[in-house]
Image 1 (cartoon, rainbow, N blue to C red):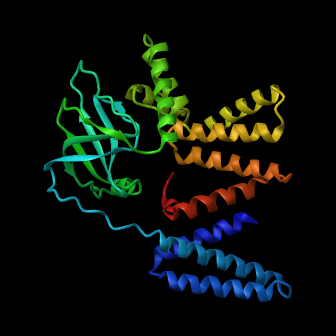
Image 2: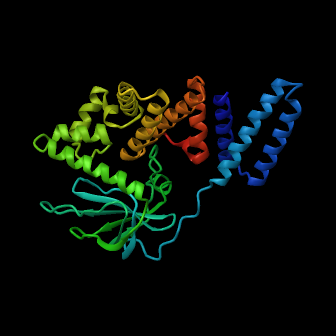
Image 3: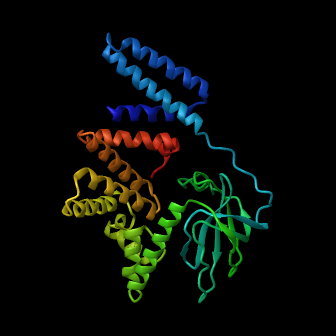
Length: 336
């Protein structure tokens, strides 16, 4: 029954996008349809389900109203002006194409994507999650070029609370400030990711092709993939292998569950431990939507097995859709 409910919820989100609605109107519609459902529960089963679906659609409309994009914060600096920015590093740094990038949280709900070009032969600056740093960089507001069929790059960044791009001068290094910030759990997981990447780089120091592929397949890190290699996978129709998705999580969880069962761990305990490992894998690989969907489905399956219920695929899909749309209704219009 969750699949039609999720579909009705999605229709409510689309209805809000099509025309202007207020939260009060959505609340009145929800209360009205629920009241009608209560009266029709025993006498008219079809009317009861119709009212329930209408209430779900009204709820989707109300959630979409509540999740309206917040007004973009304002930075007191002109475009391309060099300013000093201080904040918390809230993402692991990536190094690709001679450029280091990381996300700097300047204030609550206000972030900047910082990049710095590294000179040939120089080591990239070491920036890790949870550090407080100060940088001097030219700031710009992201914009779209309005070409037909082009993606909404500005909206993509705004969904991550990133409202500026900041370019540091070539060769400059962020100044690390005293103190730590961010989540200790995320710092541990990102530290584990960094150790795994370093380990792969050392193991395959003489084979950049194998090392780059393994980093992409196992951890979703594509910094060492050459464009020619990616084109070869596209031509072969196997590029999806390089993108960490539900297939990778399924293989990982299957291995973990099989290993735990071989060690005579009970089914529910093995599922719970595997579920915890799956969510760690999600964070390690960057939390892409396909991996999040797979981990959510596995979690719902665990709940079903815990209560001795069958894991029905359509119910799992409907439940995952409801969870994702409740957290962020704009995902309905996202290709991911």
